[in-house]
Amino acid sequence: ALALAADISGKWSFEVVLDAGSGSPTFEFTQSGETLTGMYHGQFGDAKVTGTVKGDKVDFTFGGDAGSVNYYGTLDGAKKMKGTVDYGEAGKGTFTAAKL
Image 1 (tube, rainbow, N blue to C red):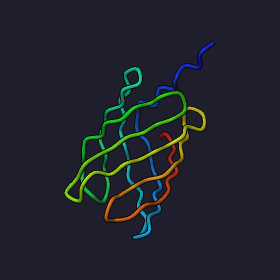
Image 2 (cartoon, helix red, strand yellow):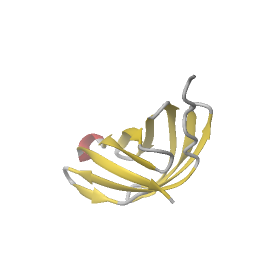
Image 3 (tube, rainbow, N blue to C red):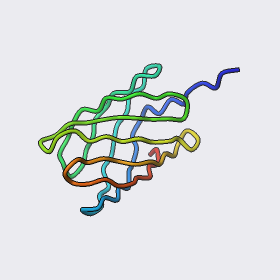
Image 4 (cartoon, rainbow, N blue to C red):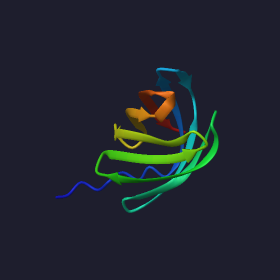
């Protein structure tokens, strides 16, 4: 049997650690099938998020004045996620997240 992707729709709290420092953005996700949309709220302002959820893999991107930011995550159950981030000029790093 195929494992259905978790539905990660809802509000999430992230802890992001970059070369240039750390932050605690929140994301609001809406998932439809494998398609992910939503909003980023953090030190770079507010931005629309687009991405995909395939099995336990979550990839999403948002754009701001500093260019696009890419998150590559793995779900740990339906309420936790961890992975890596690429903030372009601000550097690369890691994140952990929990559904609120």
